[in-house]
Image 1 (cartoon, one colour):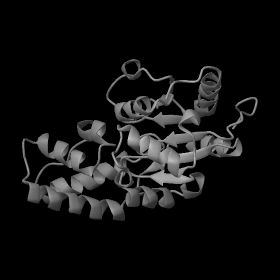
Image 2: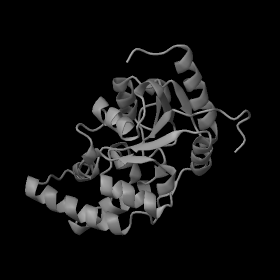
Image 3: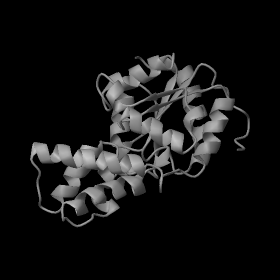
Length: 239
């Protein structure tokens, strides 16, 4: 991956969201949701119906899928639907899910430049690890910090700070990459510069997200992060 002069990321921690940022998980999440819906004699939904719920957890996806058809579930029924979703998803976690184009090259370049890489995701810890293992991404990351490891999940700053701490990093030398308003809020709440990727599942426009940098392909990531790092060094933010 040719990014010109090789940047130095030694001592820096780069946090990545998972679904919609590193990996296009929509095909398998949608498959699991529609497995649940059709098992309840409801019609399958499209990605457009539930895309903005990806990253908010399986229950939010199920609730949205049910609501689009004018149905509702009791708490007991929701628990059962959630278990069916998870059971199916575990067995189909990487059937259609793939890293976004250029992601592997960007991760390689960042690691070669000395960065510590971490996943900060609202996906459950075991599912996050299973997905990364299935896609051969495990060795790219020093830390995977799922929602159930966090004291308070994104967009709360706790999730960000705890991920950085688990990475033995410094919040003043950390950057966040994500695809959603939730990620943007988490980064802002923790005082981190934020890179927004436009190829994820967020319904809001890049202009509305108002990230520090917006990219449309992973080939742009290393230069974007290098620029933010240099800005942070030149003008430290209060944290």
